[in-house]
Length: 128
Length: 128
DNA sequence: TCAACTGTATCAGTGTATTAGTACAGTATG
DNA sequence: CATACTGTACTAATACACTGATACAGTTGA
Image (cartoon, each protein chain N blue to C red):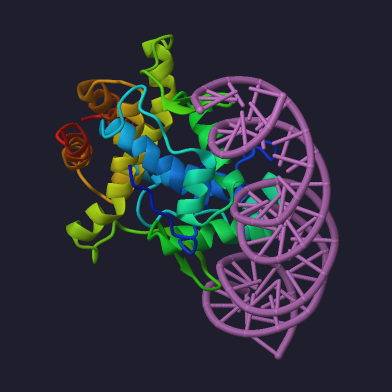
């Protein structure tokens, strides 16, 4: 699990960390119960303040991506068992609307938009 | 073309305007060469500052959604003729990756994610 | 030309986001 | 208990985002 961060990217540091962890989990590069580097360790590696890493971890926990054991470290959460599918759909729908609007606005065909999403899904799934 | 805006939504006013215009264009509720309300008119209707509307319009023009005639008003642009498809795909790919990562993270199946996007696409296309 | 409209530029004020410094609290382990 | 680790809370400095008041510049049409 190597993370990197670009302070002059415009994107906040904690969001960069969140995105990379989410991507790793989505791509199964991080599996349930895998340990994440500690707040201080990662902060030292990235040469940033521990609070910035902590903020990313807190957001990831709020999103159900990781679970943190106070004093014990942070671990990848195992799926979202208690989450109903309707709730998952409710969370994802805004993203779906977003890409639909942007894609139609660009005058792309629905098939082309769907193909693009499928490509990205395969890039994550690897073996579908 | 009725726009509404919620000052306490957390989302900046100019982004709310941009989203609604983009949605209307994507859904063909606004067609090429349709006139948009003037900066001052819309600002008065929404009870906000003309500058805020102007900022939304400027961003929309930068994105190729509308075209503004200095002193003459703003109009919906006609597609993006000069834009290569590879460029359109380049613009849309980050959104595709975003929904792929979020969806997989939620432990949804690729088919379910694609279905959701397709639903939103149909919601835009079928509005005639 | 004049009046009324269009969008634009400039400046200022308020609030919040972002990051960091520092101190605190819980847990593992010897 | 003691030490060294874990995450957390509080505070503050800085920068920037957002909105608005106001003045400017170009276009339209009588």
